[in-house]
Length: 156
Image (cartoon, rainbow, N blue to C red):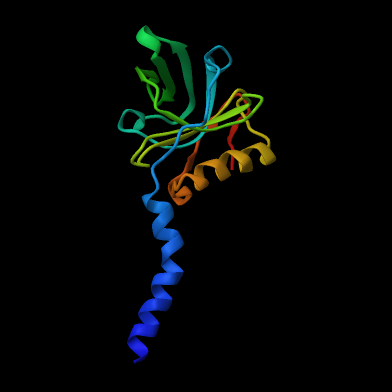
């Protein structure tokens, strides 16, 4: 009868992990669009397809769009210059009360961006931003840090 006990132990141990992985991604309760709009620097991300040629200096500029939507213009440095893509904003899953950093993701957890109002994010603020992503079930092992030449190196 050791098999049922072992199975029970495994299920009890894995249950919190399974529950977290299945919980839906939730947006922060509210976002002040006037404060959120403007330029953000990418500190780290799970890059999207359009970012495949980016080598650094990635930014996102948010603005109000039609019918209450939020548009975003993403820009990054490539080997041949700069590349841009415009789209609609995804879910804000973490937000500093002072709007110094934001964490943006999508419902399937395939994409994630840690953003900052400055090219570099102080360690304590970075930890808070990463904690908000982790609390939403994002696997931070996939995170890629972004080089911002305004400070000359990637944030760790």
